Length: 316
Image (tube, rainbow, N blue to C red; front, side):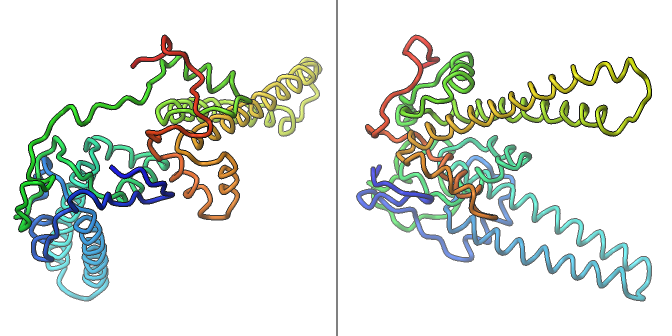
């Protein structure tokens, strides 16, 4: 594959066969006649056309449903309209689900990654993957669902899948090493960190931050919202204030830990750490930074070319 640097959407390798082109009728057939055919792949063009068509059809269904239930037609007809629209919306959801899974397969990710849509950052990651080009080699999830006109034997979609092509030499640290790197190597910025290490550390950091914030709210409630003449309760205030300061210091430490890990992750994707400050841009900054952090490890030497864990601290 090409080693050209990119920011958001990976370019196609012009030295390899491009993805097959499908007609509009083939897209419609794939989307609405094969919602349960998941063991396949679909192109970026097909996926985004299906998203657009499903959005339009969903809006039309809601308009029809709103008109039916707000008009003076027979109650029985209203229920019939509601059932029909409900069935159509369910079918559109299933069609979109099938397309999403096939699109994940097309970039060589398992369809189980779809469950990331249940968390906000996961939705960003799925959006990022949906924008990426087709992997220009066979994947283990079969072929495309439409007839390919380009019958060149060198085309990747006509070649058998070989599992060896999916082997990845990116190091995977142990959970103990991830914790050490995240929380105790906060200021070691002149290094790099894998995507696995960063997102596991980020998840743990987020949970710890939520717990600390909850405790701070509890202490604030006790200190400022419960006036009491009880001397025993007032005697606890100095202790609670000290404990609150400790929790605030812990939150600052969590921020520094996340900052250091973010900088190393940017280095691993061959971006300078100063890109972290793009997160300050209103509305889109966090999304743009997330796209940088979603980048896979660069398969070449970078300026910050060292990991913070030793070979013995790796799973592979």
